[in-house]
Amino acid sequence: MLSKRLIACLDVRDGKLAKSVKFVDTKDIGDPVEKAREYYLDGLDELVFYDITASSDKRSIMLDVVEAVAEQVFIPLSVGGGVRSVQDATDLRLAGAEKINVNSAAVQRPALIAECAESIGNQNVVLSMDIRAVERSEVCPSGYEIVINGGRTPVGRDALAWALEGERLGAGELVVNSIDADGTRDGYELTLTRMISEAVRIPVIASGGAGTPDHLVDALTTGKADAALVASMVHYGDYRVSELKRYLHEHGVKMRMHW
Amino acid sequence: MENQVLAVIIDYDAGNLRSVERACREVGVSAEITADPDRLATADRIIFPGVGAAGSAMKSLRARGMDEALREAIASGTPVLGICLGLQISLDHSEENDTDTLGLIPGQVRRFAFDRPDLKVPHMGWNEVRVVRPHPLLEGVEPGDEFYFVHGYYPQPASPDEVFAVTDYEIEFACALGRGNYFGMQCHPEKSGRIGLDVLARFGRWDGSC
Image 1: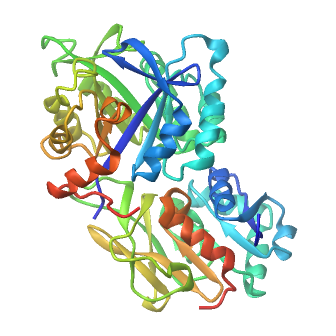
Image 2: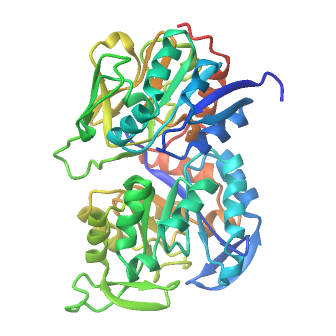
Image 3: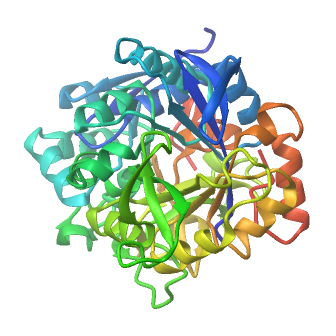
């Protein structure tokens, strides 16, 4: 039986680890390579690196980070942030990323998903979606809307429709990131997570809002997610990766417990 | 590094070969990536990795004469490890692109076809590799040990004699097959943490007998 996955997301700015609350007030909190190695040894199932570097001339630093992490971490490694072309995806793959996350650029030009899927395989293309709750309307019948540019720009696109479109275009996996919940530590947006997970036939990763181990249990049971993504919970030392996995395991969630 | 063993990784335009190379290096097996079929004849051991599709992989192997070179290396006793697609194309035929494959082990490769919407394809993530017959490369793999999988098709060998481990994903399928000095795994040991790295370390020591 397939295990549920615990994924840690590391936001990297100019080569350093950063953590934001609701996508603003980012601050540096350490060395991403060191953190990645620590989590790997503690049983993490998968790593995501998100490049939030603003200036384009510092973008290549990310390739060095990915390369250094890939040398020491032998679990799937996913990288995103600023991927605009198959070339960007290929560069990151060569540096050692397994999967590539696309986000804003795919919203602006959906063909990017198909192009990446064709080039590096569906299973390696992750569509990351930043989503906020809105009034139900003709434009957003699900009551959830896609936002881009780090959560700042609404695009008037329904989140559920975009998830289905992403799957159709060849995404192998979806990250459902609630902007409303991000950084609050009040729990994942379960209604949203479940709605998308039930609608698609590709794995769904719940993201944004994890604060306690019970939130993870909820995302993987009630929310029907295949994986739960954490950041603050582990970055600040409040919880250890192994501790979270043990908690999930003890609460009936199938997890990988040998490492 | 001590006890450095050279493994040749076959390059056929399919996957991220460097992750296999890096994992080998981590366990003291130095690896060289090659697209040159002549290199296989002199290799101590060969790793045949792969993600991608069966059709394009076979086409690329044949175009370079890599299929014959691999057959000859196996006939001469060189230990060979197939990973993921590298295992699948060791069978006779794959439903993926309706492709005739290498035929090193009798059997077919089938697509996961489920009626249940909650069973997602590809089978992606960590799952238990249950050893059903001892093999030098699986020594020390214990009940409950999980490996990382990413695949939409699965091997269905003609005979149970070549099956060394199985995995459950709604159905039970063979996830490790072997015949003589050839051994293949459906999962990715290079992405499976210490438990996976141990398989590569044992491959570095394996003389090809089982």
